[in-house]
Figure 1 (cartoon, rainbow, N blue to C red):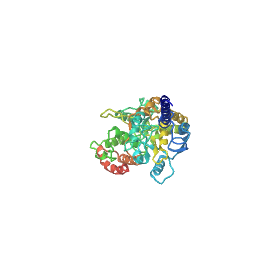
Figure 2 (figure 1 turned 90 degrees about the vertical axis):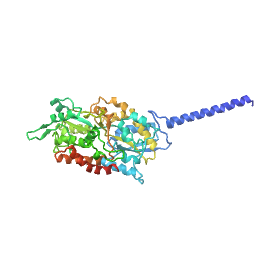
Figure 3 (figure 1 turned 120 degrees about the horizontal axis):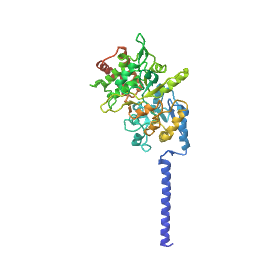
Figure 4 (figure 1 turned 120 degrees about the vertical axis):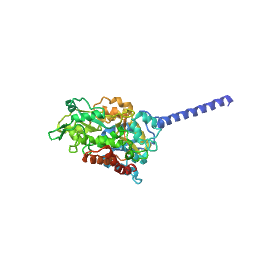
Length: 453
């Protein structure tokens, strides 16, 4: 064999090796790394089952998401298991993921946006290779990054929806009083609420101006108060999770509590003896009410059950001037997390990343809208314009970018403590900022152990 021929053969072998490596690299990239709208997760040829514990959602609506993913990933089976009401669900899921001996439970679970401090240690974090923090921040409303990031700086959940606190209003009652829409600042809102209140000859409220002031018959009293505290610029807890409001020299939390209770004790637009706010509103005896978007389902179902109608809509919540002039709204939503006990966390996260894409969220929204007034509000910034004109939904979209919450760990327990203080103040006939501030030491003593849980 000549030297020339030998050289040609050597070059040919090198070329074949390079081509083979290149094809292998491309297959590796396309199968394991590449992520797009038609993502496929590569794990093994064996079948994989991902159990998804859901809450509130109709399983049939979520099934469209599971089926779309399974079509792209034939070896994956997404099993949807609907859970019970929130109070039972939380203890059940927390008991499972925190118990080393538990052998059954979810790969994917739903958590409230205020639960992260309590759940963080039992969750698998979102892989940065799947979605970086900057991508996450650019995709979802800012509150998601704040609420769903753990103390270690990692992200532990992806939202498939958004919700907050909106202002429901009876258009007929407002029109009769000379208003078109609710006032957008608290000073004017107080005047409006007083004007909308109707009493009989004995001074008993027949039509309430707004559902505010007490807690036992106001379903979202704690959320309204939290909104007021945040708008006041109050420092509620520090970075270590310890309450700070009892030592605040500016008494901002006390001011927020006084403002809230004044609606019952000073302005007399609400009363502890009245029916629940949703009952009053549905019956046409409450002009304005604060609630999340899903309250629409309850109202319309109640109206349909008795063949009644009600001309109402939802507005953004009132604001008050701040040093920066920025709006402050309330965030109240659910997100999907992956259990640290999952045998296939990479597949579970791949599924969540897939179903949080625009196309899949649209399919989910349309499917849910077949059985109720509207689907889940999109959690993505780039989808805001698609719902900005939708009835009932528009106000929440307008507030989403400026919505926040505060670190409370266990919302049910914390809200109970605040609501008890509200009732104490209202029963006593009201209070001054100083007298309310004097009660905050006891409130802090009750809440601190919850925050340190």
